[in-house]
Image 1: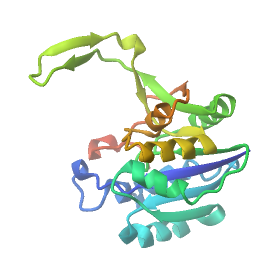
Image 2: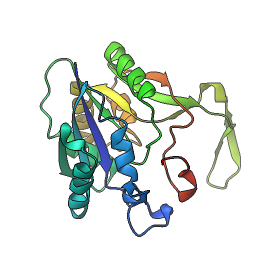
Image 3: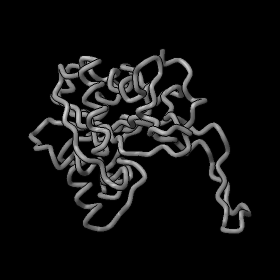
Length: 223
């Protein structure tokens, strides 16, 4: 059973307040993306890693790969697109798939993911073909019209907040992305692209600590 990892890393992270995109912000001498990669590098079933990034960051990524000894796995750099969806699609186009191959997509700035959660998602993906970690919504969710008056309150027991890694059988994800671009569908995550293609996605219980870094206040215990 082989797994491939895609890390889309083309975002600019304007809200982070740094001259560099936040995934390259250093903490204790290492970039946030390096902390993220380190969570996957020792999982033997993951045979290759694809990083979609802006070309001007290729050299920076190559240096951190060498510095952290990440080159013990096959790592491929591909140019990212104008959106996250384009970046994932570019990486998928480098892959040829056989039976029993899976691909996981993980945010470059989600470094708090645990090996336990990754393996839970892998196990569920093998059983159900598609698996996404989610946490239950703690707050009440409201829907409003354009005038910001509430039009509906959604029962929160049915609301889940999606995380990564999102894992899919490789052929399913490739077919889903081809379908999305053919029909000009723009998803907000990989699961939405797969759902749009008609596949069922299994929810895996996520971890509250598995946050996506959006501001410097989210950085607390990476060292």
